[in-house]
Image 1: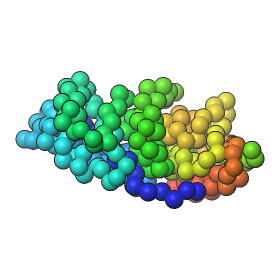
Image 2 (image 1 turned 30 degrees about the horizontal axis):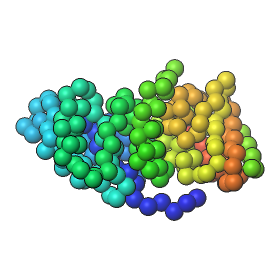
Image 3 (image 1 turned 90 degrees about the vertical axis):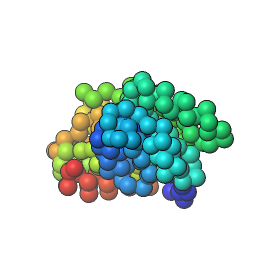
Length: 133
Length: 89
């Protein structure tokens, strides 16, 4: 096995704080705990919505030297992240187009195995094709 | 390239956390690694694929690997299957 350096971090952007926290908890459990999975859910006052400030803090917390993959849940979370990415010149942040829960779990597992940002993003996006039955 | 394969009968159902442990371990090998349970075969590096096997207690699972570290990959995954399916989760 190869020596593993810093892992890609994951940021989960949801309209709901509890949804983001729950998805992060699940992804960390399945991934074995070696990856930073940071929830950025809800507005600053705890309501439903997205917060650029929360996302910004989560991006900083998730970065450990290998870049960060961001997974949004629904439409306007995407808008919040896209607006922020314009201001993050040079940062290694990739926005994934993936199912929220499956993408979070697949990305976290690939990051735990030492996958780079491209591989982690690919794992998340391949979750569109994973059948449950 | 060396190929390797081994089968095990599961002592418990293959739940989410063991599936994660398998996929994380498989992802660290250079070899391609696959899992077969019943009629389904999946890339062992894909946690969603491993969960999608729906492998249950008493079912035979085969780990196959092809690549420079194939034998080590098969031994590692068989050990995880032995351990993890005892505790479920």
